[in-house]
Amino acid sequence: MRFMVLIKADWDSEAGVLPDAKLLTEMGKFNEALVNAGVMLAGEGLHPSSKGARVAFSGEKRRVIGGPFTATEGLIAGFWIWQVNSLEEAIEWVKRCPNPTGLESEIEIRQIFEAEDFGPEFTPELRAQEDRLRARSEQLSSAAKR
Amino acid sequence: MRFMMLMIPKGYEKAAPGTMPDARAVAAMMKYNDSLQKAGVLLALDGLHPPSMGARVSFTGGKPKVTDGALSEAKEVVGGYWMIQAKSMEEAVEWASRCPASNDEVIEIRQVQEMSDFPADVKEAVAKFPGLQAQAGQRGKS
View 1 (cartoon, rainbow over the protein chains, first blue to last red):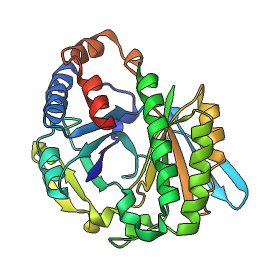
View 2: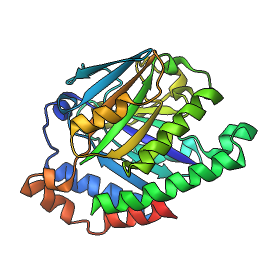
View 3: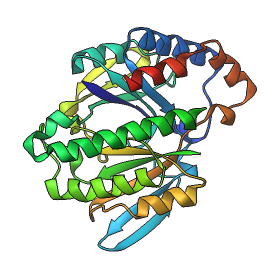
View 4: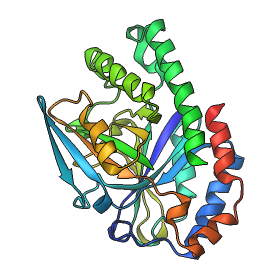
């Protein structure tokens, strides 16, 4: 099972404050443990929402709203994608994570939809399309990181 | 530049465990995903099960506390994401605007932090763990 693990934004991450060397080292160790255990599939940090935008949809109309957005619980600062056997295993890993801000912080764990979750509606043709899409995207993704 | 497009469907914060997306909406979305891929823009994408099937871990005072996802009081949650490669924020917003989203959905566009965005001391701290990114990337493909 794959899980998306979302690190919530806080005042510091929204202000563009970067983690100090101590936290970076602890986070590096944690990430290394995730990689060594074969759990880590991806992980990225996001720039503050002041550099972002939102697009709201209303029929054919699109309204673009510039950031920053109010730091509601919905706002995130970064994420991981993990491969684990259960939600409990994902929770165990999150408990071992160094406090991402050193202060009050929260991490949300969400299961990712897999092709098997959709049942017969997800026909072999759609599955093949999805597989092609993912294969091409992964090639591009590793090139983009270089 | 890499951008993350976060789909925020209103009401998804209250969705019951096992809630599935509408088949017609998925078909429209697959066409859109296909157009992203053909343009060489799409790097990754996933949909997420509702928060009622997940959990939250808070770190108040340094101790992890687990809350059942169904008990969360969040007003906005992520329903899925696309990772795209674009030349500018404007281009990313253009792509988001083409999405066949419904009236109760909002897409948030956020730039991904690249190593080159960081100052020297941060780069140095990350450099202590060589191969981390590469290894994680390898596993993602298997």
